[in-house]
Image (tube, rainbow, N blue to C red; front, side, top):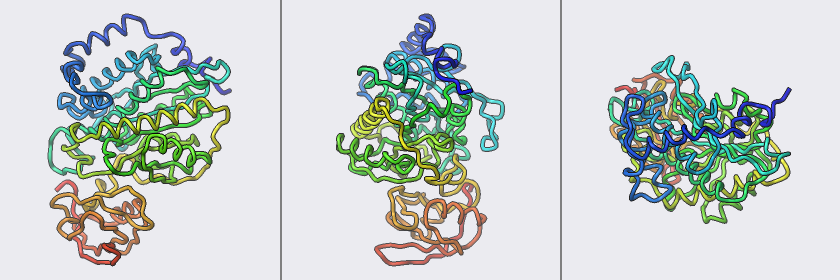
Length: 444
């Protein structure tokens, strides 16, 4: 039998706010520097005093003191505590375990051999819908708050042990999540409930979002849509890429209308599967959107710092997502789900250029092209750089493999080993070129 929010533990937690003493402890913890979980968490008020929202959230989460927010680490715990305090300050109701904002999960995974037995926490806050007959239906708005810690297997700076602050990936998405929650909490409540989730374990294989969907506090039949923000901090004069528009019949019109209202140019992509948390929801046939301002040279590197985030662009994206969330929570009809819009893009936690075999060092640009993989750049001293590949090139073949898209490049690299010499075919200025490349290893 389907459990609704009115009878399941999450709904009961919504109706029973956390005790005042728990809220007081959170406030005190972030009013001054407190030793939490064996680490001194930064003083949020002092750290963000001169930084305007929504950039203040990025400033806190991407501080060196959090050591890159590796899932299960003390830095992740500080980040989670900060987000729980922020959710409480906004007025969200706790949607985690035992009347708290925290949803604990084990981090054991074949994709995560480094933290077997460790645990992490999703942070969950709820705006309960105003209509008693429809508030059991929810719109999920999410972003992951973990990153790579000191680097390791997911880093694109091989061999460099340094703090990876992950300002764009994904403190920016969490900052947008907070901004949406703050705006919607100040408005009249829509009919349906809106659940805000900061996921952990995304970099280890979508662990937090998979746990959230699977545990059943909210039946997937009650999840009417999921909006995911991952790397939304570098809009500038560029285009916001929105994935998942083919997962519901209504998405394209809704997204274009919301984008027009805030003055954001969008590039629409159909697939509902990809290396971020929306995949956990679309795999269960929940319509999804994934917002993304494209990859850059600091992706999964120590240089992804808060000073490089476009605060004004981040605020515009948050307004756009807020418009969509409000519409979805207010409309009387469900979206018409479209199944089969895309397929999983390889190992979710791995960067598309390698990390599980041969290494090329190409940095993909996720803006749509008709065929191939457009490059936003190449990693320094990589096989791609040594071969002369550069920004704007479009890879269309590697060895015997045709490269139609990122999945094709992933498959081609997986078919080779470090040290293999292969031909790379690419298009530059409408001309096809060929170069010979000796593939490397990311651990060199």
